[in-house]
Amino acid sequence: MTRHLCKLVWNRKRTNALIILEIFFSFLVVFLVTTLAVFFLDNYRRPLGYSYQNVWRISVDLRGESDDNPTHIATTAKVFERLLAEIKTLGPVETAAGAAVTPYDQGGMSGGWDIDGKPVSMEFDVVTAEFADVLGLQLVAGRWFQRADEALAWSPTVIDQDLAREVYGDKNPVGLQFGKPEQGEKPYRVIGVVSDFRKSGELAARTNFMFRMFNFREPAGPPLRSILVRVRPGTPAAFEEELTRVLQGVAPEWSFGVKPLTQVRTATFQLLLSPLVAGGIVAFFLLLMVGLGLIGVLWQNLLQRTRELGLRRAAGASRAEVHRQVFFEQAILTSLGVLLGAVLVVQLPILDLIGFIRPAVYLGGFLSAMAAIYLLSTLCALYPSLLAARVQPAEALRYE
Figure 1 (cartoon, rainbow, N blue to C red):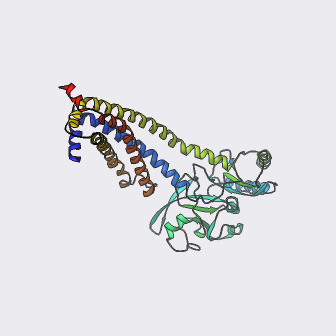
Figure 2 (figure 1 turned 120 degrees about the vertical axis):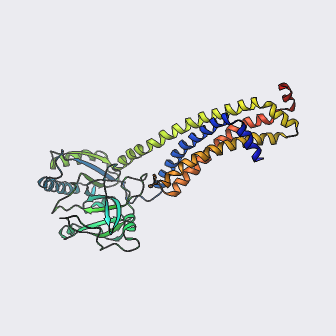
Figure 3 (figure 1 turned 135 degrees about the horizontal axis):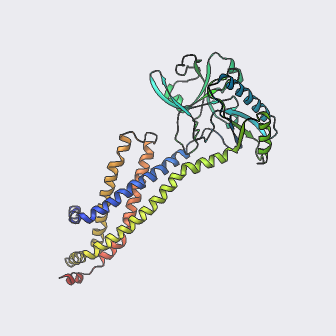
């Protein structure tokens, strides 16, 4: 039966080639959209590593001062220290911390380290000692930064579990040296491990992350550019004006932007989900056009094959057998189109072009796209196959 159906498909290869190409391109588009959707869903279900509720972000514009000027770095550090002290005195504020980058920032700091001959990529941030209290970070080993750490002869470092696993495996990293310092730098030493930290938010992939403490006594490196403030639950939005007034009183030459972290999170979600929504709309209309095209082609084939189908009925084929013939012919065309698409998309993991996507996510997107294409093909073939089953043997006589 299968061999006979394949022969029938081959006999109409020109028409069927167009159908296969439509299915092929539709599969690719649906695969991209479904894989992105599964990727976001998989990320969203994973722990975030911090709490954004009741946290406000204050972005600080330093007016374009050079980060390489030691005098400017020292002056900026003193102003930031005063800002944090003033903010903590306000009634609605529970605590406040400075940071070079903050959660849900699309930019950030990243780099690669050579640790014991093994290249390790990671994101990192420079923060003050109150950062863990503001975001509610969860320590799984060791401790967090303390202001007394500024007097240490080495640089204290806190890493997340992803980075600890990649660098140290099953060993406890607390107290161990982290990489090799550059010339003139203090050596880095791990003092604590926090749960997996995803700076870019719930929709972003997991990455290695490292925290360094900003040293107000010997300021160096990236300057603080943001302040995170944990406010008491129920703090009204009107507090923003008072907060801005205090900030401008301490640093009138700087400018400040105050936003609840929930608003920053919403804006990040909109930015990341826009490609998914746009792709979904494109995929929907593409599938709609392909579906209408398949119905039209199958209907036209039915009209052209009335004699063939009538003769088959006259030879004793039942309606169910004719229905299955048309239905399975379309299934063969769909399988060929999906097979071509599969040959192409399977190259992505082989060439390591989607290394940030877990194999389970890739497989979920592939299976979802395949299911969508087969469902579309089935629905499109259903009505034409029912019409084909209704062809009477006498219909063949009209073509004699």
